[in-house]
Amino acid sequence: MSEYVFKLPDLGEGTVEAEIAEWMVKVGDVVKEEDPICAMLTDKAAVELTAPVSGKVVSVAGAEGDTVAVGTPLIVFETDAAAAVTDQEEPPAAAQRDLAEPAGAAEPVAPTARRKGKVLTSPSIRARAREAGIDLTRVPGTGPKGRILKADFEAFTTAGETIDVRPATGRQQRTGTSELKVIGLRRKIAERMAASAREIPHFSYVEEVDVTALESLRTHLNERKQANDPKLTPLAFLGLAVVRVLREHPQCNAHYDSERNVLIRHEAVHLGIATQTGDGLKVPVVRHAETLDLEGLAGEIRRLSSAARDNTASREELSGSTITITSLGKLGGIVSTPIINQPEVGIIGVNRMVERPVVVGGRVEVRTMMNLSSSFDHRFVDGYEGAAMIQALKELLEQPALIFMP
Image 1 (cartoon, rainbow, N blue to C red):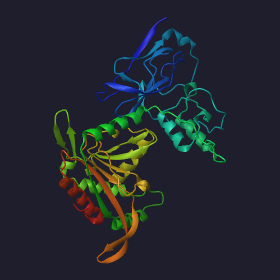
Image 2 (cartoon, rainbow, N blue to C red):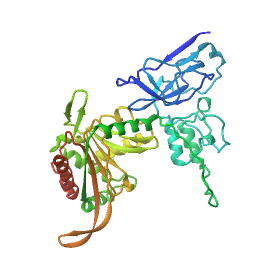
Image 3 (cartoon, rainbow, N blue to C red):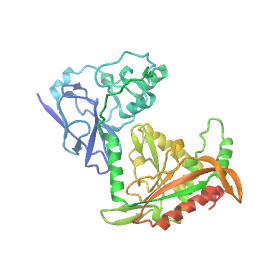
Image 4 (cartoon, rainbow, N blue to C red):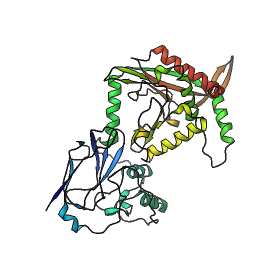
């Protein structure tokens, strides 16, 4: 009998440790080389690791939620057990990969009875299942050990079965509780938000904006598009306006390097777009937004937001923003107090658009109004500077032709 010790590899970008997000095997399991064994979470992305050899799992480094240092033993295999492995469908040949399931070519399948034991699939499929109300124990998997692939999930949803959620009859007392271990991306979000709120003296500024003309222009441009063309959203106009005002307010387009005590002003605008996903809040980044026109910026926002939601965004696409825009869309409310995305020094929150009566030139008119809720790092952005930037942004949004002037 011989043993193979698989140590946690360097997952890129100077990673020194990673969190165990999900075990796909347990002690006693027999696996084939390149079978999925676990998902590891770094500061940038979730990475799926596969077995480097065939064999029996003798031990694992810890439980889901534990942190493992790069170079330390992650899993130990008894390699003499390889002969006991039965033939299975070959998984994608990769020692590690970002968590995005291959499309595959599985045929639509009929609903099945619930399976017992842990369901093997990726975090992105689990998130999509939660959003769609689908019970994964009913989804047949064609991957190794019954693992549910993207094609399996999509075939199942095509068949049309969702979890049976029927309203309870009568008014019964509810006495149960549930505990959710805070691990993975949710723990990273919690740690970052706590650190930002603890370390940064936030200065918040809210400004009311009349976007009637902007919405008129957006509607006109969308009406000129073909029926199947993607429509322009208010976020694209806002992003373009942010790029323009940062020319005159470079202090707001900066990073603070706390270790060197240096403020780094950026000429490039790498625009972070805070995006709600099934796994939590992610910030995909539009690189060099200053080089894009309206359609180009809108296309990048769509592409990156979609990639963040389905877990196909690369690590590079989820890091490096110099300023962030965050929006709750139709749930935007009246005012919000966004938390700065460290090491940035500013963030702009978009609130809901509403039609309401406004006094214009001594007369009451119905206008489309929207609030911008911004936060700045008061150590480096004075109140006047932050307010001046938002006032400049307000002018561009209220007179949208100015956004496109050189």
